[in-house]
Image (cartoon, rainbow, N blue to C red; front, side):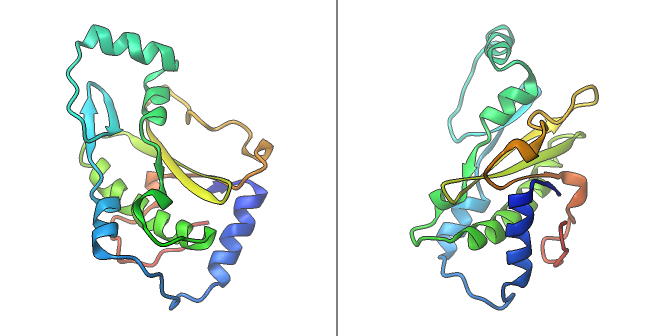
Length: 173
C-alpha cells in the first residue's frame, strides 16, 4: 500500500493493536457490507442496487463529465465503513474491517474484469471511505496525485497486493 505519513501512523497503530481484540458487529451488518451490489455498466464497475438502463451514447456523455471511465467509477464506488454498522467504530476498527471488505470485494471484482483494481482508503473526520476503479492499460491511477499533500490519512492499495484467500493473514505495507 502506498500511504501518506498519517496513514502510515494509523497502520502502525493497527499493527500494534491486539489481533485478538473483538469488534462487536452483527452477521447481518457484515453481510450487508460484504454483499454490496456490483453493477457492470458498459466498461465500468459501480456499486449500485438500482437497475439503470441508458444507451451507450448517454452513458458516454455522463462519463465525459467525470473526465474518464476511471473518474466515473471512482465517483460511483464510494463506501463508508460506518454506514453498515449500528455500533460506533473507531479508526482502527474501520481500517481492519475495511481491509476485509476490500479483500472480499476484490475477489468479486476480479471475476468481472481483467484489469487491476486500484483502491483508495481515505479518512475524513475519522470516517473511512473506500473507493475503487479499474486501472485500464493506458491510464494512471485516477487519484494518484501526491498523496503527501493530504492532511488526512490516505492510502492506495492495488488488487495485485491482495491475497485471493481472505482467510490468510497477510501484512499489507
